[in-house]
Image 1 (cartoon, rainbow, N blue to C red):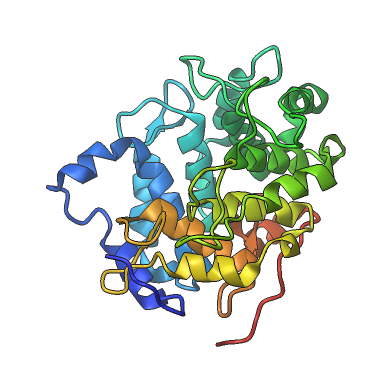
Image 2: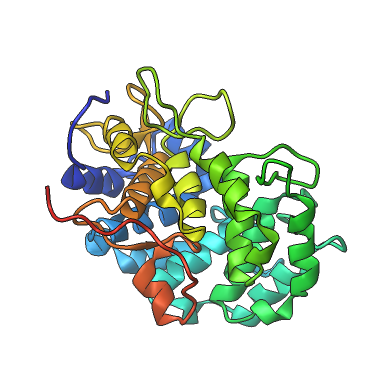
Length: 333
């Protein structure tokens, strides 16, 4: 049960993440197998941002990631025995880099797998079955950049597809012709940032559209939604803020109201962050809530790179930092 609190409950959230997956007899554990690799990435990144990277076993994490290797496809699945997919492959790469274990991966084979999924239009399919989405394009661009192989793709072709996904309101959709959505805005803007093609973005128009995602009335005031007339959700604290950070316009939203909205979704007893106050917590919203607070300059948190959604110092060490701007880190409350 969530309740309003005025501070980030770091110790509770660390304990919550540590306890995830311990009860393998729980039906929920098996029903979420298709998200396991992503969940590990969400968990370790949230821990890093809270300054507790060592709260989980590094060796166990690396071994699990490698157990998800799909040798036939050349990528990583979400769980041992699952088919390789771009979503889990990016998470695997991010985890290995965070744990300084990228040498465990067969990089040339992973790169070949990623490149095999690009379509003639420039978009990427998620796996061999052919579903396309700008999310998968972002996963490919992010992963190739982290692996030092971004130049292996045709930048103009890839960025050109994203240009086709841009709408009159400045936003982007999941495919060409789809409505604007804050999560898709992030993947498109971040991919363009990685490829140094932000010239495609209508900066002012998009920033206004993103700023208008903040709900200013009602019980969930301060939260951000993904589309007009929708309820706010903690995960958009990252999707919207990351894009505004890349556009250097985080100040266009009310940071204090958003901070209070995120803090109001915490479970003070068992830890974790929910999508909105009173709902069940999960690691997805815990990660993106903490990520949003980092961009807002919340005291005591580690800087997050909004383009790669990884600790900023890790991206800086790889020489990949782009020109983004979050709010200044505030002093302790």
